[in-house]
Length: 143
Image (cartoon, rainbow, N blue to C red):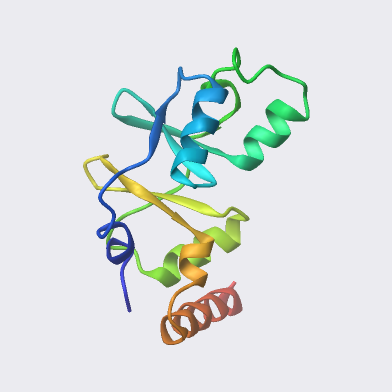
């Protein structure tokens, strides 16, 4: 079974913002990179993840100013992460069981390698997707 490093290892850039950036800056970076979520750092340490959903529900819907609202005010703090050695199936189970669409991939030393999305996993070739879904079904039969 393929590992998450097979997805993030082929990427040349890691998309991040700093926790002190404005939501507007973060949204511009997400738009420029064509991503729906971005890792939030404090220096080089992962502290959160900011998604389109966070921006929509915590900024736009509440009438907050994206220019003055800081990312750290609306991000999802301490996100669940995956290691590069995690399998596609393990990540799929984690996302579906916890109802989120992005996992930050972090080395054991804490270095952010990238973000994997539910869409990344669902766009796998059919065999890989079937293996991941079979693992998911077996996992939930046990619990």
